[in-house]
Picture 1 (cartoon, rainbow, N blue to C red):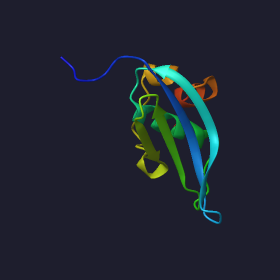
Picture 2 (cartoon, helix red, strand yellow):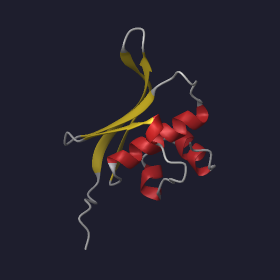
Picture 3 (cartoon, rainbow, N blue to C red):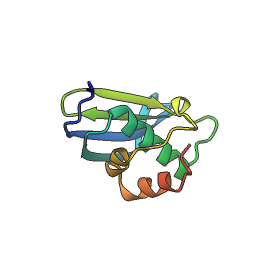
Picture 4 (cartoon, rainbow, N blue to C red):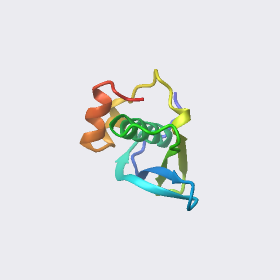
Amino acid sequence: MTCEDTTPRRITWEVRLYEPVSRVWMCEAYGQATTSAAAADIARAALAGHLAQHPARTTDTYQAVVRTDHGDTAVVHARDLDAGWTAGPNVLDALPVYLRETLAAGVSQ
């Protein structure tokens, strides 16, 4: 028996870059999906895929934010990405094709 919620829910995700001069987070990628995947896994996959395609400079601060329609929020920073983590099929299904292909190629993080 599991305590995980497997009911699909609508999520909105965004990858953001911190702009220190103006002290704001700027959205660099954005998407919506209906999925049963964990919000933190979606954030991790979106951020890893984005950074694989657009490598960060050493001074950049990136984060991914996922919000569900039920008000839950998950935030993952680039420093929180694990090198050995792989996205599951339900996570990949919630991402656009360009991120799916990047992660499937094994280029993530």
